[in-house]
Amino acid sequence: MKNTNLFRKMLLTNVFLLLSFNVMLGQKQHISLKDSIDGAVDLSDYLIYAHGFIVVPTIITEPALGGIGGAVVPIFLKKHEPVIDENGKKRFINPDITGGIGMYTGNKSWMAGAFRSSTLIKPKILYRVFAAYGDLNLSFYENLPNGADKEFKLNFRSTMFYTQWLKQFRNAKWSAGPQYLFLNSDITLPDLNLNLPPSFVKPKDIKSLVSQLGGAIQFDGRDNIFTPDKGIRIQSDFFWSDDAIGSDYDAWRVNLSAIGYYPITPKLIGGLRLEGEQAFGSPPFYLLPGINLRGIPAARYMGKTSIVTEAEFRWDLYRRWSLMAYGGLASAFDDWDKAFAKPVVYSYGSGFRYLLARKFKLRMGVDVAKGPEDWAYYIVFGSNWLR
Image 1: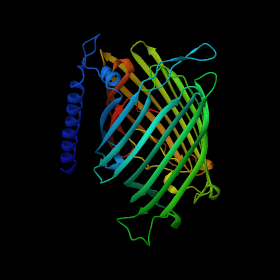
Image 2 (image 1 turned 180 degrees about the horizontal axis):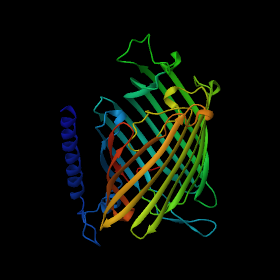
Image 3 (image 1 turned 30 degrees about the horizontal axis):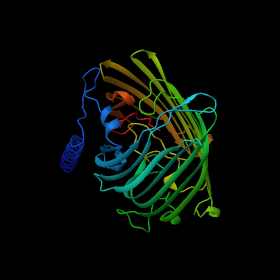
Image 4 (image 1 turned 90 degrees about the vertical axis):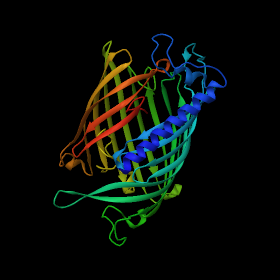
């Protein structure tokens, strides 16, 4: 009943925001919600002609955050025209995106923050900045000798800051550069005696400061950043944490990810995702590699190593409507000699997409997924593999 009331409030809020936005635009100029080619509902003109501003109300469906919640994301957009580089080739520039986020979920988690993603055009530098404060209630699991997992509900009060700066090469699909993460957290165990924390929580984790310096290199050859039809994106990155840069932890973390799309037929798009992450040293338990799959709650399976594979298919069934089918396998473990001692985690599911903004190739829809324990659903903006 509580989740139902929350959903109704979110729905009313979303309708109010959209109507208010419509009135604001209507005072300046008439912008049609129908596409000029097929007459279907389309938001392309809103995104292009809204003077760089749009409010995006979002439903949060992550099981680890209570399964239901809402966020309001005001976004400022600035569009750039393509430029001709010194090699004579046309280089497309992603729009500048500046925004904020306000979030509240069914288990009383909340967060407020701001972000910016932009391009310094002449020096060919892509950068991202994100800062936030959150009061989050998350579940973590301890492995017991009898083979069962015990759930512990922990509260995080955290200040977060992240930035990444990538220099594009002569071939602008390639880029590389530094990144930095700052995370200051106070952790409480609301349903436990603080003298009896789970074994994976160390005393210094209760009040901790993480400072991580790293780097990244990526190749991005996708045909668009929202819902690709073809192309691949490969990224390798690392983070180093040490008291020399103000961290309470001495650790390394290395990640490699690859995402690819291929048009099997004109109406059937296949996708494949491979990710692997390895931690070295003694990182905090909440930054250990985990399994990120639809149908698997965040932080449900964690270890010093994680390996994730997932495949999906999108069938463009009728006009702007598409059907989805997907499935994945993953494993998280501490030692390579016990890599698959536990059963491999699986998930599968289906969903649908609607081409919401044709000029941006932006699709939106819903996915329903089944993991080893339960069902979960997700509101998907762009792609579930959006990076």
